[in-house]
Image (cartoon, rainbow, N blue to C red; front, side, top):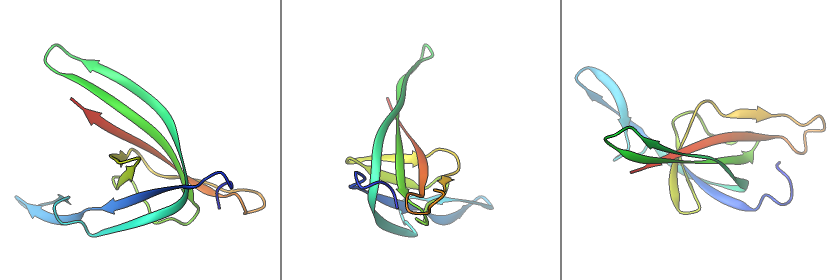
Length: 113
């Protein structure tokens, strides 16, 4: 359980799988599952600007703490504050010595531009 101030709700979306040219790829048009996760804490994280001469893009990041045991994995999409982000890297479990404040940290990214 995350701290008592963790009163945000996020939605986890996991893609289905489709086969294209012999390879399995995520199928975001047909999600495998979608669940709401309550008692989360949404916090700002990094943001950056990418300008390579051809394209201007902005990366927006969030750190979200979800309750320990939540069904999340790398590559899932998370809808937080009305925007869709991707879990960047593996979720990280933080175990409390007493067990009552354990949580999972999600590093989220979203690109625009």
